[in-house]
Length: 483
Image 1 (cartoon, rainbow, N blue to C red):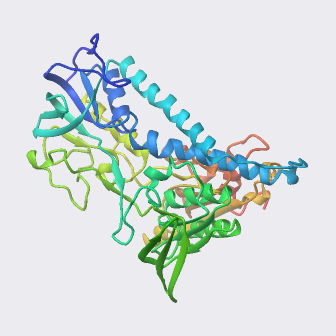
Image 2 (image 1 turned 90 degrees about the vertical axis):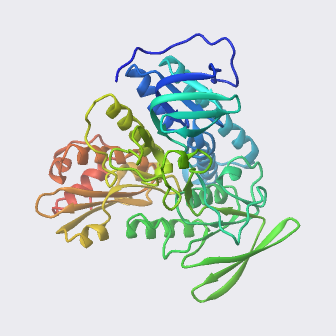
Image 3 (image 1 turned 120 degrees about the vertical axis):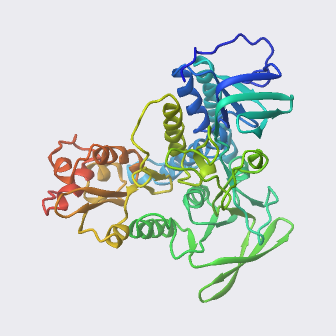
């Protein structure tokens, strides 16, 4: 279904980037939500000539751009610079006084957000995509009602990209000030003196790194036996050691029982394996996961029944209702922004009749921007062994890297999980400074069906951190040069 690219001159406009439409408008593709799944799908639909509308009830760019991925990375960069100042003597630099203004760091993060939000609006308009402000809900399989404004959208294809919201737990009711989720924490302008972070996943360890750099007393509470439980066991234990070395306290196999608040501080009751403890703090960050935004969009009117808080889809991202798709966090498949973007492009191109390979979620890259960073894709060592694979592991410690030594960033390692006979790359697991930037190189090897043999043949620039990838590949055959 290829229609003429739809553009119109709109004289009456709402907030930045948004447009006002006639009471009933018809489209080839309507997209609910403008996060990294929705806006990318909208741009691709515009490129392919579809008459497209993106409907957003809050801010363009969704959670990732406004409250998640982007502002948190800006805050982490602030924390990184502060940490370097504290280490200045290592580099022969004397700094008499370090005065860190957390609120100005938050201001910087919001400027980054503002610039990118305007960029999303510009890109959608450039590709002829209408942008509509309002809350959409289904009144039928191909019909949406938008409120406020009493607007009806009819579309041959509708993509649900409503994202997710922070999960909460009864013992820790959110008050938005002392007990918060990342949505509030990302814009709070004061550093807590003592913070308890409940949840040792990516959000939890990233905020732990930020707060600790600014001098907070930080305690991580994780219900499972280790932090970053979805990562390779060796890597998550390596991160735990690194965080503890920085002074972050970590309680695993622990759960929150309750909370007592007084003016200005709180006491949290935590049950550990060896008994209960009480933690004093002036802020609690609840980071226990994400639930899909499935309420209030009229799924009951199209026969779509959420399961465990998420919309179920098949391998083509189709719901149980023809012409209705779901992408991103609302599907619960892999809660990552780049996965949502890939899904959005896949769906739009499928609507256009373009046949692409099915998305491979096992090989999707994952990145955690803690200090040190963690990056991975594919099978962990344990998963590969559980599948009965004949596995050989390649490792290279960053302390043996010339570039890492020059940067004074020697903490970490590269770990490759490979098939013994063929050298097939089953998984890659990295921890260290800026390893999130190294992962794409080894991911490309996997996508092109390369092996550790090709990785070993490849000549890398010297000195670079990426040489660690080559050395880890060589180590699977006992041929590593520098270890």
